[in-house]
Image (cartoon, rainbow, N blue to C red; front, top):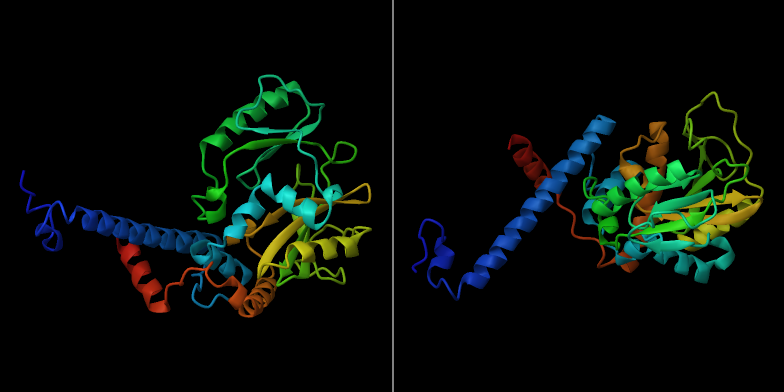
Length: 328
């Protein structure tokens, strides 16, 4: 059968069989270019939707813009292991000690029909973020099994272009509940730039009226004023800061989430795309201050980071692709 001239382009028509490899290669190249353009448009649109401005991806100035750049260009393989809720425990145990790590009661793909762990306990996905459910009753467990099937059935982070989550093996894990008096522990999120903590975000009432406050290292509020009184710092703040800086020493930026439970420090997780860069950081001066620290950290870490970050599109390429996809 002769190749169809209407389907085969000139550069492939000379040898249909010998050229088939070139056709496949060219097709894959076009797919990659198309996917990149689609991701670029999606990142711009979601950022515009949440921040009411266009993100500067060639020279990001704010934390939220830097997150968008990382989503598009940074393919550091360490992100995958550090974001994996199972694998990161081994790293933290070796780095800080096993006493920092909440034990894993079970892990797998499909939860058993009946729970075999003392209540309350916590079910998480190993490959996602925010996929956590506290089980206190049998009715809760029924809901948790339904949620867990949904978590396993979907690739987390694809819609928001959070690359590393898609590389983690899908799975579930069960941990003991670590809160006191049935309440979730206060979540302390340390913003670490080139191995140095600059800000601490404190999350309050996560299961009811979730809100957060950001403090500097002197425990002075730097986020917007709210009716909430400033919570006291954790009793082992210096130890938490030291742990966060140890875990973040390898990266230009990472958020290290820790707890203090009954005056005991506990590891939570490492986050490389905080809020996917879509949650507003207010005041805007705080977003800019964090972005400035990330810019400086990237400059200092450029050599050690080489090979992980893809060549970002130039300003002209961004404008051209943005115009093309906006028009299509």
